[in-house]
Length: 125
Image (cartoon, rainbow, N blue to C red):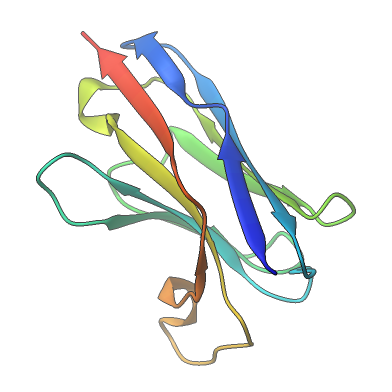
């Protein structure tokens, strides 16, 4: 059974940093891209960042570019999201995602089949 378990969320002040982790189990994702999404109250889930199987390339939403860094440790089957200079508008539940197979095409990094349960990030001003 595939499981993606996020951790590292919390309540912080604007300008602070957090690092989210996503531990995968049940299968290895070392050959696939992985990503982070988020969903704020009353809004649809949105793409945050993605990373290729080898650690490159990386993709970011414009709203987090320059502040967030996605990385992975394939030896640990773990995905990370370093979030710096947090803003109140970053408040959301953050989800880790992984595909069940290799996707191709220009938008391959937006396609996922497995999702974690989410971790809450709250940024106050």
